[in-house]
Image 1 (cartoon, rainbow, N blue to C red):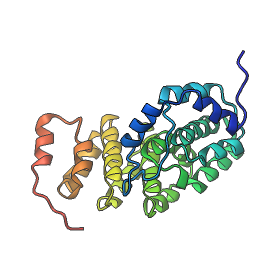
Image 2: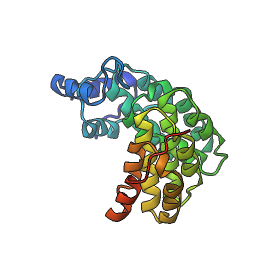
Image 3: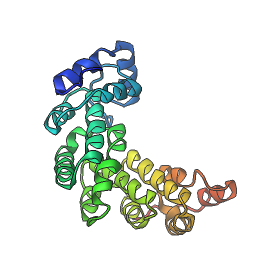
Image 4: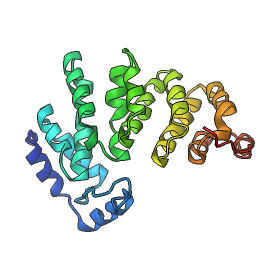
Length: 243
């Protein structure tokens, strides 16, 4: 039996065993780490997601060590960290879940790319808040930090899977005038998921009220699974860009 990885340093060494300079360059381009881009300054060692998940299978780190990984300058280390935190959260009792939830939200500056958010927000924030007040989502959605706003939106994925629509409808409305394309994509994606999981009337009602002023990217994501005639109808509505 393979010996378990129990420290952040050992986990990083395991990741580096898969490193590729060519993949690192490709990842840097894909995740937009250039000046002025959303991933500006991010660093990569060139490890694929399947390879990262293979390292995760051998990991059994305490939360403190997972947080050390999260604070790494390397993207793949942070991905391993959020995947590990998500797995730990699911196995934890309520007291430990609160510790992980609080630690996650205290370190959102390191959950700083769309794949990191999308791999963890629903699995930690969404599950934690499901039986609790959803007020924290509004605070996140109003944050100046792009990634906190995306965390708010992606957290609703867990609610959507349980048939709840109120929170994504509220957040999508709140974020209609957001300046970031990554927020438009996230909100549109969640609206599409809502419609595709038995809540088509709620999606159509939202579109009837807001389609004319939705950011184009949000709209296109939201209507992606609609019949062609419906997609054309919403796309051809006169644009109303007033707040």
